[in-house]
Each structure stands twice: as structure tokens, then as C-alpha cells.
Image 1 (spheres, rainbow, N blue to C red):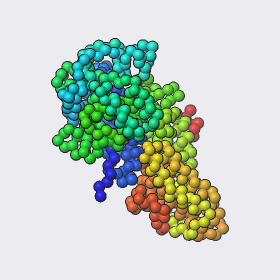
Image 2 (tube, rainbow, N blue to C red):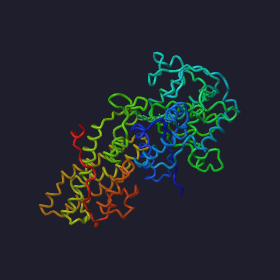
Image 3 (cartoon, rainbow, N blue to C red):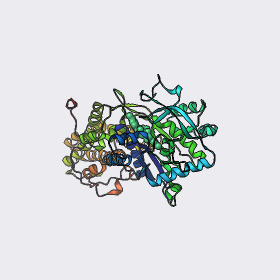
Image 4 (tube, rainbow, N blue to C red):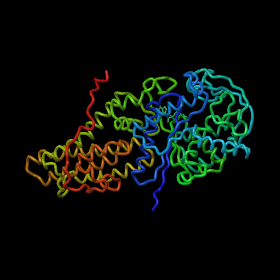
Length: 514
Ligand code: ME8
């Protein structure tokens, strides 16, 4: 039977500068969702990429005496290095400078023009170059950009416009019929009131710079940012090309994951473009919160960014991924600090998970000569522990279905916590002393099986964990015990050779942070 499909995307980031941990958060979150779906039996397509056109890039390249293409090539290389460093398992990387993308943007622009949904008029408004956004007079805050508070420029030029307004009623009806389309709900309400205030037509071309995709029937215009950028989600699948098999297989997208700053573009402009083109709409747009510093939102234009490479060098990939995914509650903002990161490492990873594994392996070595024995009958707190282990995968899957990644991790760690408590309650060291080998066997088996459960469930979030843990549990060569399907209690066979290995997550001295 064919596997169900799952298509997930990240925003395509601007190569105007290096990426910071805010971008890493989005991409790692999408990666965790993609990995989770693969683990649970889906045929997954995971797309990321870069949004390379626009005046800001043109200017940045000039400042460095480079052509825009030279400039973006270099930065995009850096994007790819970062994603490989963070173990991001994307299937495709789309660049808006790709020929495959250019063709589709031009084709769509032409079609919308031919059917009367794009028309020529004159644009007058305020433009913020760092944010690449036009504002109307009343959107400005004290005459400045409402997003970055910098100076804006008055622009007046001939432009093409997309007749968005025509689709407002249809959009409202769609949202009413598909209440889950925009997540979380609070963002949906914001978008609905935005549209109800009256939707203006959208300026979709510019003549004041060249670095963009030319309008096919009027090449002194280049396609302005959002029509170009949003189209990546289908151009990457080969929409409109000779081989559109990926498009037919994976569109509509299951999830567009974006930060809350660009929810409006993804939930209003993009669906309306698709309506106009008579194409199916994505199933869900999720707008996550921001990772904030004490000093406010991290942003390239403000220069207060945290470099993910530095963090990975210092703490390791899985640790950084765990922290990002655990710390930001679904839909809300989260505060980043190195202290918070170290606290998470010390409690959740070193104390809770790391200790559980090392105590379990050490005791099997010490009391069972390193060979895990079959469990005897259940007694005392066994049933409670086992029930929790059996129920946790279901709970994790439910949270992941709602994209509540941090709750999914919290549920897994609940089981870790319960198993540590179980060790205290059953005190295997006393059982060994008191000569109760059968009970000791049961306790050590149960804990080893919990470690296996936790490691499988945590693997989409921390992809390097399994390869470090399976040798310690003696099941490195048993792939059938690494799967989601193998999360059936008691699948771990007795007789495996358990060996305590390296410390997975060393404790970090908070004082060392200075
Ligand atoms: O907007 N916290 O690109 P961009 C969390 N090219 N996430 C953050 C963040 C933070 N502090 N800062 C950035 C663009 N992000 C367009 C997108 S898509 C068709 C075009 C993440 O490089 C978050 O996902 O400015 C946000 O939406 C995205 O980076 C913006 O990236």
C-alpha cells in the first residue's frame, strides 16, 4: 500500500546576511516534524530555500563590489552548511534564482495578467528598504517604518497590481469553512479582522531596481517580492513544467511553517493567488512565535543575533536542537539566553535522560554481568511505569499532529522522570544486596525498555541520539527495534549485551558562562 504523503515547508530566507538561531528554530522545527512523519510511516517532502531577489540584496552586493548573484551564491552556501551542521533533512533546496523557479513565476504572472487579475496602475507609498515592505501613510509610526523604526522613502511609480480585493469574500468564506487553516487560532482572528477592514490590491512589480524576475510582457518591471517568493512552494515541485510528478504527488502542502512576522503573506496573499490560479490551497499555515533576547527580537537589521554555529561548537547539535524545540511553547514567544540553554542541558539531558541511561547500563553490567535478563512478574510500581510507556507514543503523536513540539518533548520527558522515580522506588541496589535476583531482573529490564522507548520517540528531535544509545543497549545491529512500530512493550529481547558508554550529556558549570 502506498504511504500517505506529507509536504512541509520553511520560509525561504533572505540571503541578506548570515542566519541566526531564530531562523534555525523554524528550520529545525520543520525538520523535527518531517522526521517525525517519516518515522511514523509517511512519504515526506521537506522543502527549504532562499529568497534572493530585491533591492536590499542588490545594494548589499554593490557595497561589496560583487554582482548580486556572486553575493547570494556565497551566502546561500553558508545556509546549506548551517542546515547540514544542524542535521536538517530537507529533500530539496529552492533558490528563487533557479531557472525552474523563474519560469513558473513568469508563467503565473502572465496567466494572472491575461485573466485580468493583474493590471497596470500607479503606486504611491512609503517603502522601507531594510524590511523590503511598502507601507501606506497611516501604517507608519511617527513617520517611520512600523517594523524597524527606520526612515522610509516615498515612492511613486508605475506598477502592476494584483486584484486581491476581488477575492476577499471568497477568502473569508474559506476561513470560515476551514477553521484550522491558520494556527494558532489567535493569529486567525487577527487575519480575519485585517481582511474585514478592507483588502487593498497588491503592488506586484517594481521599476526602481533590476535584481528580480522580469515581468514577461513588460521587462522594465521586475516581479515584486511576495509573488516571487511564495511561488517557491509549487515551483520547487515542478508545477507547470514537463515533469510535474512531485507537484501531483505532494501538493497541496500539509504545513507551511513560518514565523508570526510573515503569517499575513502566507495566509492572505498566498491563498488568494492560488484561488485566482484555481489551484488547491495548502492545508495549514502555522505561525510560530519569536525567539527573543532580553534586548528584544533577534534580527539581522538590529545586529543582536546569536550565531547557531557557535552554539553547536560549544554544546553539540542534538543539545541545541533539543533546547530550541523544548523552550519555545507552540504559538508564543520564548526567551533565549545561554543560561536557559545550560539549565536545560543540566536538568533534562544530563540529569534526567543521561542518568537514566547510565544508571541502567551500569547496573546491568554490575548485577547481570552485562547481559540483560528476562523480566519476572510485574509488581509494585511496574504497572504504572509500563502503562505510561505504552501511552506516551500515542500522546506524542497527538501533540505532533497539533504541531505542539515542546509538549511532545515534555510528554517524553515525563516518562524519563517516571523511570528515574521508579529506580528510586524499587532500589535495585538493595534488591541485589538482599538477594532478590528475579525482582532485580524485572526492574532492570523495565528501565532498559523505557530507555529504548524514549530514544525512539526523541529521535526526530535529536537525530544523533539513537546511534549513540543503541550500542549501549546492545541493539545497534537490530534495526527492527529502532522503529516506531517496535514501540510495543516487551519487544526488547532478553540476552542483549549492555555496555555503559560515553557520557551523552556532560553537565556544564553555570559559572563557566562568566
Ligand atoms: O521573511 N525568532 O525571510 P527572513 C523566530 N524571505 N523565528 C525567526 C526569528 C526569531 N527571532 N527571526 C527570523 C523572509 N525567524 C522571507 C520569507 S517565504 C515565501 C519568504 C524566522 O530571512 C521566522 O520563520 O526575514 C521568520 O518568519 C523567518 O525567519 C523570516 O526570515
